[in-house]
Image (cartoon, rainbow, N blue to C red; front, side, top):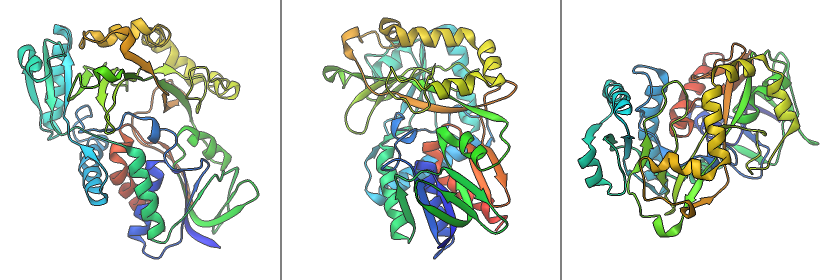
Length: 397
């Protein structure tokens, strides 16, 4: 059978693309291939479940526009499908006068992006969240929480309902492009499609190379280590609580996040990973380490960011140090309140000059489009990202 489109990757971006293809091209043959035994098993299923409002992104940028549109679209989709979500609001807390200066820049950025935002002084912050301390804070009312795995399951159901086909437990070991089609071969199976879209996340660069495309970047995995807050303190906060982030890095700092299932999580940090898909602390892949260690851009990145890298490594090794990073805004937390849980891993695309890719990165050929970097917050923005990718595909069909 010759499918019209094959989508590789069953995370939220891949599923959203397949769903949008079916909505746009009614009756088209759409195939989704996912190597795991269910949807959203990697980045999507290991994030903190936040529906971001778009405070941090450059005004007028594609990331800012997609995040704003994505927050609305995600909430609308959850309402339509009966998926639980809550709009709790976020507090970005400045713990020092220097952070308050950076906080004011965030306020201006948010206003330029058309996002509702309010400045609180220390007393107003404590009135809203008695357990939180800071000299000032930004309140972002539209930030929400959701279980993105539930969103993925609903999207997979939509794909099947609209006539698409999903194969789980199916790898893409070989990808070959000919003049009129693309052939994907896995373990004992082969599929043909007129066009291919790859949303392979942590394996995106490898899949593109496997397909014969020239790739100038490398995926470097960053572990985001989380703790659950002990059950007795799960009601410590109502809002999501974030520190003021370092503007030089694409990470938002260790934050307190209520989850839709009633837990309270703390994290993540951002420490160099030793395996692309190794979620346990002890996981090591010699292949993955050798892959980025052989890439010149990794060493340039490490040279420029060694101080922050050492700090993150210290937070990873020493639980008390991790705790102190949180106690600066939540002093009620104690060491015994932190219960380790499985980490998340972020696929960070790094270029040969050592720069981290903060925007979308596509690698293309006449019949293939590989999404090699879908910048955070890709889960929030997945629905409009899918619209953008399908429009891009439409230009060549």
